[in-house]
Length: 134
Length: 126
Image (cartoon, rainbow over all chains, first blue to last red; front, side, top):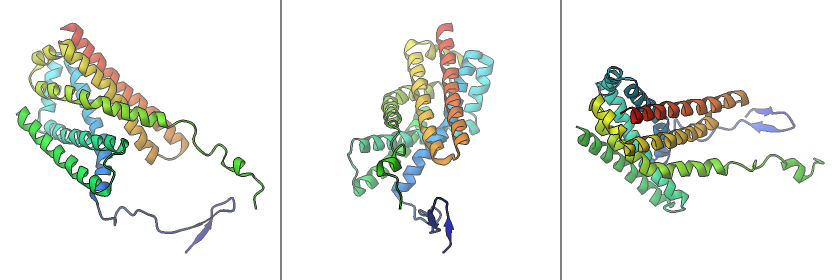
């Protein structure tokens, strides 16, 4: 093992880094944790698109029809449905986080169960919204 | 052997007496968004693709205009807080970090301003 001098008299042994995400077995806890972040970042796009939708409406009918038409095109719907699921997942997983902040449901069994509940509810709510919107 | 005292060695390396505010504020926007996001989402879905006249009529109503404005204020704050945590985790180097944090605030603030101005214009012009 190589030992490098890190300066100031400190020595650092190059040990394997942990956790190694590529070989780490995905678990419901870690998967939902990163999904919370990914859905949050992903919804940035939807936030901008909805702001654009309002700006278009304030600008005029012709411009609004163009933007509204884009958002209801197959590509727009693809983005919005993806964002809708992201919203519901982030919503239910956020409730899970707030519950943990109140020091409730923190046992391993409870954490795994609430994770599956949030995931299933997010899919259900997304489907219900799509059915309602059609 | 070091001749520096324990106190001197740790001085300035611990808590900067801040940090909890960000965490608390993030919970606060989360809780506010539980009702606000739902109050915004359903009328938005209903008005998507419903045409300009219908959409203008909906958001000209003080209830929908106020909900939409409050939603954008809180959601843009929440977005800024969330992206800040991600930036702090993945962006390294003082200059890059500082620049990213400032750009994040400008971006999220910009989205909020555009949305609020547009909603206000719709609400006041109809």
